[in-house]
Structures are given as structure tokens and as C-alpha cells.
Length: 316
Image (cartoon, rainbow, N blue to C red; front, side):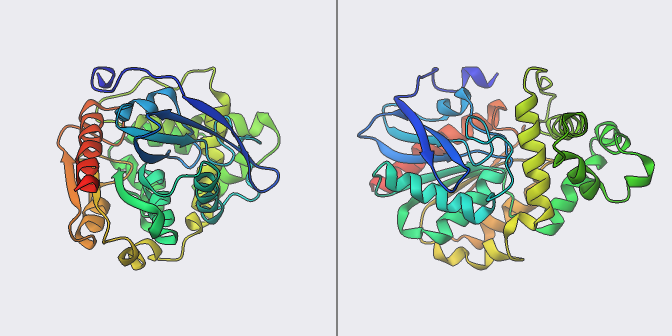
């Protein structure tokens, strides 16, 4: 169990809300040692939010960690709001938060969509980055989006069948458009069932061994995850084709550790290998007994080890 691998539970040292562009207000929290090396944690999704477990990847004696819910997610408000919600907006929010907390520079830690956002932020503000720990690499390309919608079913056909058959047969030719139209509806009778099916599909494909299903008391989390993912997918993650690899040279002088589950079906390992090959000097850690989820024991163990290694590289 990953619970045995992670650091002990820890309370936030301080927390608050940062007003960004109306109507958005983002929730943030800080843990660990105020004198430690600063870290910013970027959650996945888009739309999944932070959790108490995310604090536990970091040694509280050595790191000063900032975690926050991205726009429309978690405790940030308004929940599942799409206006003013683009990759560029989120990159700007990270920088606003850094300035607000008076942090000079930090390690950027992100998994899945968080790895995408980490690269976008780093390429926009390389002088504010000490290094990167990235998991489950997603570069935001059209083939990766198509894989999520269609390819994952190669390995999880029963889950994809539920995902597809939720829609009327006449709408199954455009899965993304059909789901998007439901998810953006103001009517809970339309958006809530669609969000739960979407989130369930993703959860079913996220680990080498099955994870517990999303609890029924989390309808808001399902909605923010599904609605924001569909929004970003439809807009091709608000990135130009090949943008992240094309501008990678802006950060390749910085240390990077890439952690990837060998059997990651949501973000297949080929993408991580492409990034590692394009980043001279990066470390590429392949976890042989894991899929996509950061909570799988092998992934969690590798992330904790990666943080210690990047700490040492920064100190030397």
C-alpha cells in the first residue's frame, strides 16, 4: 500500500485564497519547513484538485511545499468554471502565487496534466525553476487526446464499453463533442451522470491493479474533472502543436527526473521516453510494476526518492 511508503500525515502550515482573474479565486496551502527548499505541486486532470495525500510525497523537514487547486477545481471557486480557464491562465496563476508567497524560485513537481502544466510554466518562467520532478508524462498532443478517448479501450474494453454506451448510439461517432455538450450543460440531470461516467472511465484505467471506485459523495470532484478535461481536450490543451517539445531548450539546463509507470495506459510510456530523449541529462525512472496513479506504491516510492535526488543536485 502506498500509505506505508508516503511520509506521515501532516497538516497545512498555513492556507488561504488568492484572488486571480474574476470570477476565479484559488485555494492554496503550504506545508513543511519554512527554511526548506521551495516546491510547487501541480495536480493532474485538468480538474482533479489536491488532496491530503499529496502533501505526503515531501519530507517536511527538507522542503517548503506549496499546493493549490487550479481554477474551477477542489476548494477554488467557482467550481468547474470554464470561463478564463486556459493553460495560459493557469501558468499566470502559478506565477502570481509565487510572487504572493514571496518565493524566489522553486522545484516544480507535477504528474499527468500536472507534468504538462509544469513544462508550460517552466518554459514561460525558466528563471523561477530550480528543477523538475515529473510523473506520467502528457505533452498535450492530439494523438494523446485521441488515445484517451479511443486507445485506452484496447486494454480496458469493458470500461470503454460503459463510456461509449452511456451515449445514444447516434452520438457515439463524436465522443468528445457529445460528452462536452452534456458536461457544459447547467442542468445537473445532464452533466452529473456524464461526469460520473467520464471520471469512472479514467479511474478504471489509472492503475495496474484496480483502485477503489470514486465515492458517491464526490459529485463535485467528478464534475470538475470531467468538465475541465473535456474543455481542455476540445481546445487541444490551449497549446500549439508540438509547443512543449519545441520550447524545451528553455529548461534543459535544469535538472529533471521523469517517473513513469511501465504499464501506464492513460499516458503511455512512449511519451515519457520522447521527453527524456529530448532532455539531455534528465533521469528517466521506469517503475516496472505500476500504471498511471501516483498512489501506486512503486510510483510513490520513486517520487519520494526523486525529491531527495533533486535536492542533492540543487545543493551541489
